[in-house]
Image (cartoon, rainbow, N blue to C red):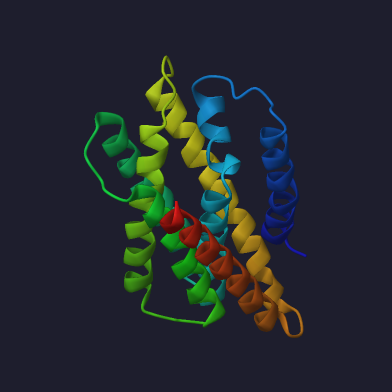
Length: 197
C-alpha cells in the first residue's frame, strides 16, 4: 500500500469519529473550529462530499483530483454569498438533491467529460457553501470559519477517494456502485422528508 492510499485510509477512519464527537455534543468552538465541525455535523453534507470523492475515484485521473478541488473552491464562493445575504431559493432541497444525483452518478457508473462532471459538482457546491455561510454563527470570524469548513470538506473528499480505492479489489466496482446507490437512496429519503414538511 503506497503513502496516498494509507493517508486516505487514515482519513476514512478519522472522519466518522469526528462526526460522532460532534453529534455527542462536543463544543463547537469559535471561528475555525466551528467551521470545521459544521460540515461533519450533517448527514446530507457528509454524503454529498463523500460522493464527490468516490465519483472522482471512479472516473480516475484527472477527475480524482479535479472534482474534490472544484467543490470546496466553489463552495467557498457560495459561503460568501450566504454571508452577505445574496438570495438563493430552496437551499436545503438543493443539498438533498445533490446527494441523490451524485450518488446516482456513482451507482449508474456515469462517465461524462471531466468538464461536465466538474460543472455538476460546482453547481451543487454553491448550495452547500451557501448553507454554511448563512449558518455562520454570530461573533465568529468569517475567514477562519470558512477556512475550517473548506478544510473539513477537503478531508471528507479524501475519505471518499479512499473509499473509491475499493475498485482495486475483486468486485470492487460493484461495491462502489452499491455505495453510490445507498447514498442516492438516502438522498431520496432526505428529499422526501423536506418535501413532506
